[in-house]
Image 1: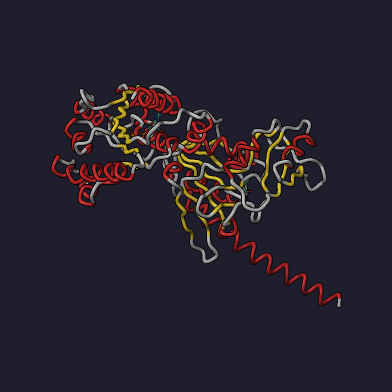
Image 2: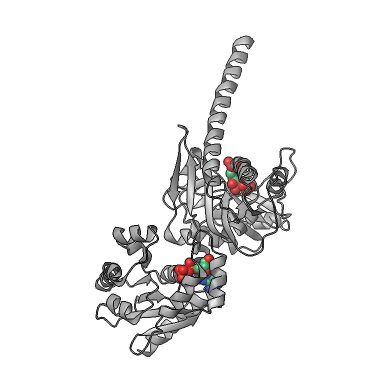
Length: 442
Ligand SMILES: Nc1ncnc2c1ncn2[C@@H]1O[C@H](COP(=O)(O)OP(=O)(O)O)[C@@H](O)[C@H]1O
Ligand SMILES: O=C(O)[C@H](O)[C@@H](O)[C@H](O)[C@H](O)COP(=O)(O)O
């Protein structure tokens, strides 16, 4: 009898070992895919967990074989130590990062909302995700869920003071919260000296609302709900393949958190959904500010560059400059987009350099209901932003030629001009206030 149960146990262990290996392979495959996104000179954010351990190995291999110049910020003491052992340079978080890569405990299908924090590193992980232009999640297929809370508890970081009271307040939201313990029974304390409450979620949740409700409780430091989405989630599958799940445009442009901050400010409501064309030279912030405006006003967003016909894209890809004849079908598409929004009454934000009056007249298509938002920046400031922008090649000479082409919006152009030396949040606030003031006057 004993022999048989022993064999069964051994067999169970073997099956488990095979399963673990498979899951580990999935993590490794996703990690190796993410390591390909690293480019020389990038400032990187490094997550925490066993999937990230594979990413660190793959990154170290690239750093060693390709001598890649890099600077990394770690989300935990564990990651920092491991990175140092592997010869990866780790520094403190200061300014923006180009790319952050992290694991997750759950990835919600469709929204790419995440639950994170089973390793206790959620606070720094969120800070680093928020500070990065691109946030890429890597995970095995077991992490993909149709609703958050399906498999995992929600970790919430709370201060190590009046813990019972904070847990009771969390309980009032319908969550069953328990302080995390280590294997030896002692309280688990995070790298930041806080307690982690693991919470059972009550069925389907509104992740954004729950995150906000939890953070309204004094004593809650941060939650493991990551609702800003991500640039993409790379998922490793049991057949050895990986698949990439792309995030929405706001996550891809890294503006979701700023939109959430602006929404929390409850800016003035506009009487009408506006039609906005955000214009300016390269790196003046058109994509960033345009997407934030669309997000905060709840109107559709379109990057004019995505509307180029295939023939133009081919030409640009070959490094040939577009002439005015090439540009006409493209401007026509922008005009069509604006007309569609006008007819639907949906409002909308389009971003395009629109440097000349003639181009702007074309896209308005004879209507006077398009408001131009001209992002006005000094050459040196923009040259500096271009130099710091990864993945965009734009020689300073081209910036000078754009300034030479630029015709400032003039008479009858219905333009709002904003200087771009403030933060994106301040700029968007200013624009919305000016739109609201104009609405009130009309
Ligand atoms: N107000 C701002 N302050 C600081 N950085 C900004 C601001 N607006 C944009 N950026 C950054 O400058 C770079 C260029 O912005 P982007 O929106 O891509 O410009 P454009 O679409 O006009 O080329 C990006 O790295 C972006 O994050
Ligand atoms: O420390 C944390 O809080 C964790 O990093 C967590 O957010 C992590 O991303 C997952 O636990 C994934 O872990 P695995 O990669 O080990 O599955």
